[in-house]
Length: 259
Image (cartoon, one colour):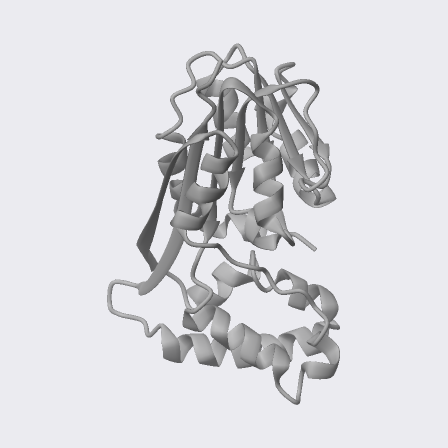
């Protein structure tokens, strides 16, 4: 259900949290690095550039995303590879030095148990770093839930799993500290200034709207998008310089210090 081209319409805005997250990872020369939920692979490739001696592996459940990742020119390097897989069931070959997951866990049922499981794969000195959107209470998500539950769409979308959202930083800190990690957890609200006629709609066509679009016929999807577009235009009015789109994210970085 994923469209790599649509997802990358706001590549700069989507990649900024990734680099803010990685700035807190102090691994110097890891051997094994995993990017779980790697998407189209462009950010995974930056991990291979940062750690040129590491074997970097990108995992994603979307065949479309993995196809796009494997088409990257840099993907021909033997130390960067991509594979289709479910991050809930992923296991490394032995202990891993760095696990990165960027805006993925919000889609994963029981994501706290999954994050704790990943922590168990780290060798001493290993790092786990992930960030998740945390704007479930904002108009962009409230409108999506309300429309899906409305009389018009309930029969078609009532069973469609919309993306789940983050816990608070303190909950992640407690979870991973109990798993033996030294943890840094924080949150940031970005004020993205988006451009275009319907920028918030375009943003969510690449992410949160994907399950909805996959469940509807083309004419139905067009009708749903018209309803959603009207709500977004009201909730996020355009200014002369663009449309301000607040986006809260939660960041977690942990390292296993014990020998």
